[in-house]
Length: 301
Image (cartoon, rainbow, N blue to C red; front, side, top):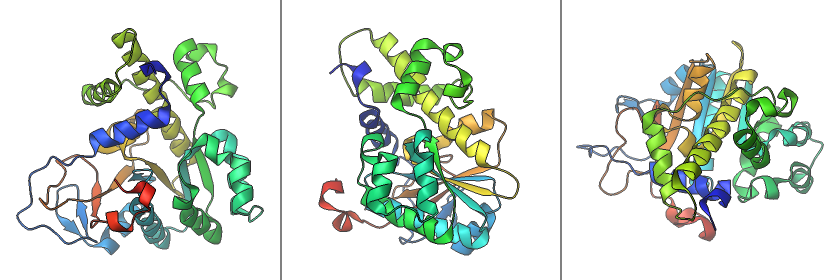
């Protein structure tokens, strides 16, 4: 398989795997799981952090898609933020905008789980086990929190890259504007991901297409978050960590759109050596214990 034909989900998994290793200095005393650390590495009380971040316009909760513990953390964090700011919208990377009617019907109580999966075309649009996400979806329905499809189809992403923005009518690209150029650091990360998938053809041309497609992905999600945001609504996006770390990806595109009042929260598992991320990894991190024994067998790795 050539690099240009790799499924986006495969490349995304590679991106997650590349950026997640924690390369910061080991802490002298490793905090116990269940604690938050702020951007400065200092411990922050959960109630203090939730109250502060609930006042932001956009909060992004990172994940590795197949990690059950990450989705449990997202649910708990959503509940904490919702307690402080009930007027909330939850944005989902998992589904393209074509699935919005299915999300609306789900929140309204018009679909059961099987009906939602069929109406949203979940398995073809995403592919990861829906059981990982249903607790969050049920929470949204119980609280009548609107769910928002943030993504666009791989077909549209590739069309924008191949044909150019002006060739695609605005109504067909959901008013998504061309993305801001990536930082050199982000370009380097994406280049490393690309090189994990050797293939035939011109590397530089293939890399350029890959980076352009990734930027479209980031811009689409940033646009969805920004469009849903107003001064009275907290928009929380559930997004792959690879699109969020170090302010790259979606945060960078939000800044370019003029929405700078955003924060990124990420779960981490420090491991036995108690290594933590370097400064700038996220605005706050939550310390998970080793949840591997409690992951479904197909998700443990």
